[in-house]
Length: 308
Image (cartoon, rainbow, N blue to C red; front, side, top):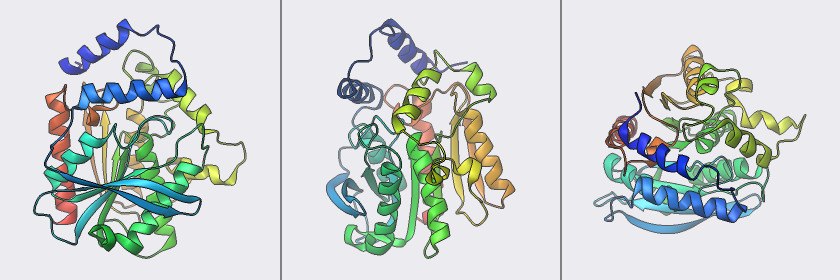
């Protein structure tokens, strides 16, 4: 049974379901307004500052969240927002990052990676990996202990986190202590959940197809394996993972499948499925007590992994 807050949201969206999506700017503004409704503002006492991270293609922005009484140098989470590689930014996930910083008592560095279709694959994946390499080398500049960090994201950001964890392992050196993969954006084609929840449950099959088209992966591009670590990557030797899915999410089964593959490769996995939850629930704490509880579960996992 769907949770009441999510049903109210779906009913509201159904009333405007025939409105044309509009330009990309209009879609992004609409998503930003929706997140403001579903997620509110988060704890105001979390300090923030803007950060510029050098990358192979120039630089990308980021935002650092610091809880009260945080040590000068301490553990942290490198976070990539969701939105299908097309939508979302630092503002849409500001409340979630504030809640994680507050409840896990860690610093959170949220990355404003480049979005498609203006910046096609692998631009966003490059930014994510460059941010991780930068954090490993220069984390102390933002008060994060480079030996005690986690890497994570939701939806498309979960894909970025998973792909970046694989690349960091392959590169050697210090590894994240935890992967946080929240309804990660892997190809759900052919799964039961994709068939059952392809329309009417917030994330639709059409939206997934549109996001994939905007991302612009070229056929036979050898780099395309980076967007599908669940299919192509060797998973042995990866950091422990926290994987969460929603029971009414078309991506449920592909996330569950990745958790199972990680376990089969010898990786420690905490997998949580939330029945009655739709895609995007981690940014819906303002309308759902269950989503707020899920954030608390994630914060507990971060504290256990990072020793806070």
